[in-house]
Length: 491
Image (cartoon, helix red, strand yellow):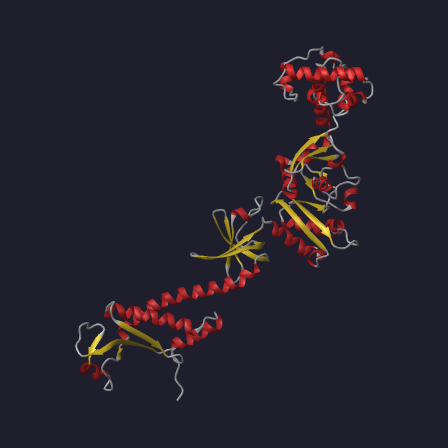
């Protein structure tokens, strides 16, 4: 005869179909709750057991007692005579399972079971969602804004709810309930409080994913995104490299008349994007990274500590630095170099002052006149210490300096250092202003040749072609509108 299923069994069948919740897990939850309800009546020391028929879901409860000759603990022991009243075949030393009526505990057990079961279902669903979404980290998803709590946004993804924290939002955006939103699954955390799916629109990964979606060449690995530096909602710099000589990485990302890049910028609240072609030559790469500005030269100041000086035209200084230092900050983050930016005018003025100060120092030495000082500075001899370290033969090889004059100058330099032991060989503008030169300032050259401190091997001239992003200034702050399309640039 086929057993008739109870209402509970039918519910469990439905849970298994719809929620994929195993019956055994639910059975254990219910039996645990029933035992807990029975224990409140029989006491904490009582040995209790509950079972469920796997076919009908019919519940039964048992009180377990050990058959002994003399009872010392009534909660867990029973005499043989009493045991045979429940089970005639009972024997000494056996554990007797005495059936108990669970109807009296049905309400308590049902309520407890319901609470535990609901919690269990939630936990099982969280595990399922975790196992589903954890491998999807880095995937772009679309959802609806469910509600706003403080600065955080909660997004309905259909099966579950995710959070878009304030730190991962684009600051210039404002979100409303039921607004459709795209974001990347930043991370999936399973904490004590529960499951949390964290979305992001501010991460570099989201920008990369948008490029992969809009540029087929990136999805096909023909073009590779090497690096990204970004200030969400304002400006981003993306370094791209082509794995095929037939494909221009910048042009492919921009699209015809900027069709591809415009879609990405629109998704990011108008965030300006500079596309930088990758180059293994560091100085050339730094120069290109300053787009939309076009540096005239890049000089390494300290190779070990990765410091460099970038010179730009006077009218591009604001663009090179960017609003509140945004552009130079992004370039530094992108290249890993600490960068200093100066205009050509600033560099010329700095060179003039340095040359003038060096000349004033050298004029303190007997035998050094204005023209000789200019010659020395042009050859890199811009301090008294450097002059004292030369030989007469070396110095007399310079144009306009004879052997006797050379020896006189070297002796004068050495004597000066002996008389001034605290002299450190540097000339500082403040010190020079405080201590007037021995000779009239009018005799010093107004501007001499630049000291040959910039070595050709450490300096990269400006690129012959404009930076990849032929962008036009859009405001007084140096910000730009991203455009890499030649026809648009002509417009």
